[in-house]
Image 1 (cartoon, one colour):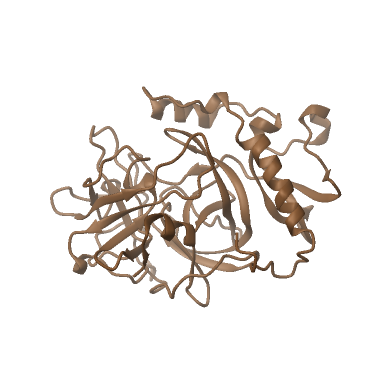
Image 2: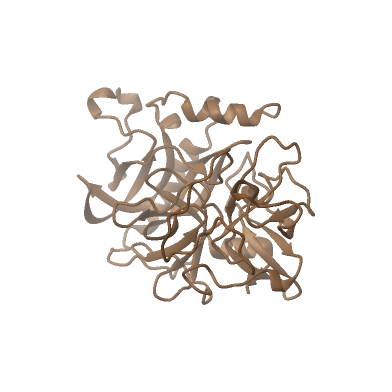
Length: 361
């Protein structure tokens, strides 16, 4: 990560050592094969459903879903101390743990912290259900919007017609020749299973999109997810059929004003297909995570972790693909792709744009 990054309100004296320790423990815990999330080529959707209900093992290699650098919390209170953060599905009382299942309280004199986050999953929604929209001033992202705006519902059509789905249109990007819709691989390319040219609809078919009238783009490129090595991004783009079909103005937020690096304690906002407008706070910009997909469990490195304000979750299923921006400047910092009921995960926006060789339009 860039050496000039800063952690607001924290001493950076131990930062290099914390990152080294994080990398070592991430390799030890997150790259270990996990039997309950073994890849299943013949019936991936069934296996994924089983994984979500599997019993949690307190052994660190099974219970830890993220290792990062963040602020140590004691009794849910901020301490101002940077620590190696272990994110776990369930935080067990020490009285229920054997010595071999305990995580270290210190690593070479560095502070550690254990935080319960649940199971990280990609946040596309694919189900036979639709949430009714409550009347109000906030725009409804699950309707047909022309020109289509970032923050609204988009999605693909399952070639086998076994399910309908929807995710979020994140931003408009360009390679200086064409305009593209930016979102996640799992929102536009079904985790890499769709071929270039696949139609993309607004709204997504789960939200009433019509395959005969609502095609707005065609899948152009998806960055494939790697099972044997850490990933940096879950992203894809689809070339719009006509530039007049899309707008760069994010619903309720407005157009992004360039990009910037995410910083700890930065206040951010986003507009997503499911939760609409939400405000949150960055809690880490350097966390490695293990995320459950239909095609397997994938590890991502140097991800942004966020929590919502006001006791609200920052995101929910269907918000995958949302662009996350610094509140006040509207500079983009991340691309939302996964999370749990309490925490949201985003790719660094610079990594996303670099992987696809595009810039924000």
